[in-house]
Amino acid sequence: MANKWSDRFDEPTSDIVKRYSASVGFDFRLALVDIQGSMAHAQMLNKQKIITKKDLTDILRGLKLIQKEVERGQFQWSIDDEDVHLNIEKRLIAIVGEAGKKLHTGRSRNDQVATDMRLWLRGVIDQHLIQLGNLQKKIIQLAEKHIDTIMPGFTHLQVAQPVSFAHHLMAYFEMLQRDKSRLIDARKRTNQLPLGAAALAGTSYAIDRKYTAKLLKFDGVAENSMDAVSDRDFLIEYNACASLIMTHLSRFSEELILWSSDFFNFVEISDGFCTGSSIMPQKKNPDIPELVRGKVGRVNGHLVALLTLMKAQPLSYNKDNQEDKEPIFDVADTLLDTLEIFAEMIDKLQVKPINMEHAAIKGYATATDLADYLVKKGLAFRDSHGVVAKAVKYAIKQELNLADLSLSELQKFSKLIDQDVYKSLTLKGSLNARKHVGGTAPIAVKRAIQKAKLLL
Ligand code: ARG
Image (cartoon, rainbow, N blue to C red; front, side, top):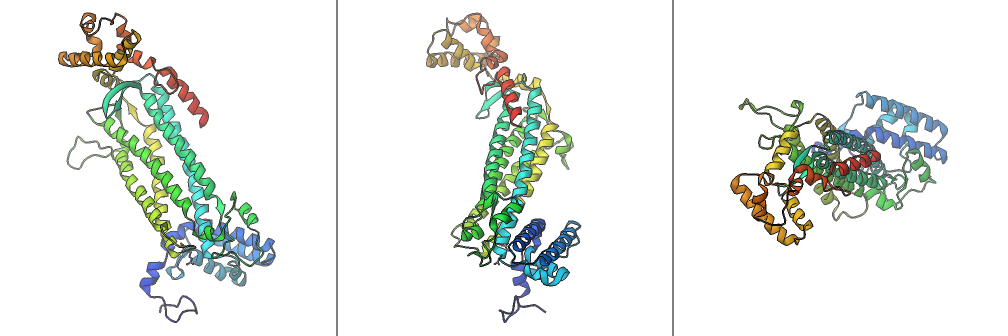
């Protein structure tokens, strides 16, 4: 027999409505932070003499027992009680009786769920910060081995200029560094306590919100009760941060996929991150980077879902907000796994320096250096660009590299060219010339790595 929601109702809740509106199937994940929040709330109620010491003792005893049940996977979740909050409250009353009925004094599920989400997200952000640092560490470790490894740098995916492989890797260090600072910033706005806002208007009990905030290690209390129960900006900000992190990792993934193909053959992704083909015995497919690239879709999709969820929502709390959970849980799960797996994959990446260098030589990567050489001899850059374009065209026809052309051949393009030109045409010479801050010269890259290490 279906029950009525409460005595306010004449008709029972149908099974389909129960199933449609229940969130316990996914918000049970908030159980531990929900208990944490309830413990702090009860302590505050007692400090303010709203409940007795005996009530508090009973409540804490019951909540601790529930915590154990949850941790051991023994807690019996029931869709009859809609969500994580009602499930836990009902169990508390079953364990400790009268005192359990007093826990919900001066609060509502509206400020409770907002508090839970913030506590939960704060923990996730802290994990990501450690994970991002760990991935950066792996990137630095790989970079340190390849300061002198020369590869072609690309623009438009065409060979552009030679760069140090370490320099290329350190570009991702920078992206992840920005990602960390964005998360740290988002954490500040996440770490504000909604509790005390109650349903929307605050409460008539003499509560001490700052005390609850202190117990729960929040940086402060949400200043407006209506904003406190309805705001989900912090989830959107987090999702946006996650989208950017996934975007960065998808760019890295795309490069690993290209580099591990036979045409590039710059790297070998360790077997553990690849799979074979059920039909083509020779295949080793870069599944993990492909999946990372693919999973950006769901993370970005959730961002749009959350933005759409909040759009035009009137103040204050609306049940719409229950729809914030599945997307954000999925974003967190995806990002937690992706960051962990990515760090391992980078740690085990095999690099093929000879193939990289070969590709840089083949691609006329030092043409700009020849142009710069002529400028230093007095030619205007636009003119020297034209001279070198002709020289490259000639070299392509002869199927030679620029450095393979004889001095007299080169001099046909400009009388300013001398024996010392060959220094500029080598990959090493090209790299070494770019030794300013942010440049790809090994000496500059070494400095960048030292600086990066200090940031970890
Ligand atoms: N399960 C709800 C949610 O996730 C909790 C808050 C419900 N509040 C209410 N007044 N129905 O948002």
